[in-house]
Length: 447
Image (cartoon, rainbow, N blue to C red; front, side, top):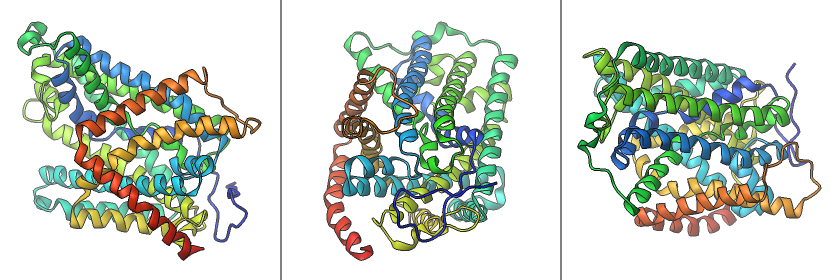
């Protein structure tokens, strides 16, 4: 039987989220939210930085290890503060209303923008498979966004089941392609690896760091279950299981795909490839590999879009419940769906699709994507000091050194983003400056 969940504040007014999500959903939301277009496009970029088969594989393993390190930290917050809302919930509790507002608002906006961007990708690939919809990627994207919203409107069970089903299809699809690469194609001739010059010394170190930047982006999404902490059954047990099980599943898929690619193709053929797995599939099924990867891309992206719908509505719901944004966004229907928050998130995604601009938004908000994790890690220190006796079902192993190490890596990554994209970083800082008067105005409106 579904159980309602008490809110973190005493003034609950409209409906409650339902604690009905299990370990299977936790895995599905992490794998579904992490594995999208990135694994299909990133290998070519990584090979450009590290045109060596062994280094190419090791950097994917390093990305998985860092994901585990970060998960070790964020899991403490997810079990200590088992309320839905993701990074916003941690920042709001540890650092206050305004930092929480900044994290929540930017996280919500970037999630809606990311969903819009990949929805258009689905429209483009569907146009390749079905000529009748070719040339209409935005229309197709909008239809899919609305269809997913309608599915979730019926209740969280529907959204959860579709997430698990679509993620299972995604996993089976990748498994089939990877298995075919090893079973149906001879190993690639690696003598051509030296056709691309390898960086040496300091240049090699810089190349590895740049490749690791790609890893951090491509592995992002591993913390998806924290957006649903108060909807997960037995969160003190299932959140850690979901976080580490999901990270392991994603790392296994990513390393397997990377290995399959360089099994079929020489590293020189991977360098600069926009769709390296598609090129490998074409070696196995000449003329059909690209179409098969297009199908896999569509399945992957729809699972990602469903996860974005689920997560963005929880962020808006949590902010409304804490009276930091529009009042009625905390309404929850009998099926456990925050319908007003879902409608607003869907409307934002549709606006991005129909009027464009999502790529610019995502580029600007990449600054805040890293800030989310930096804020989480700072929150661990703040709460360990301020609330030392609070119940912590899970504690970070090796604290404080593992937390310091993870924080240092994210701060260095943030510095590299600012150095590499100064203009959008300045826009992000201007957005941050403008957020305070917006915060005060919204507080006054809902106060």
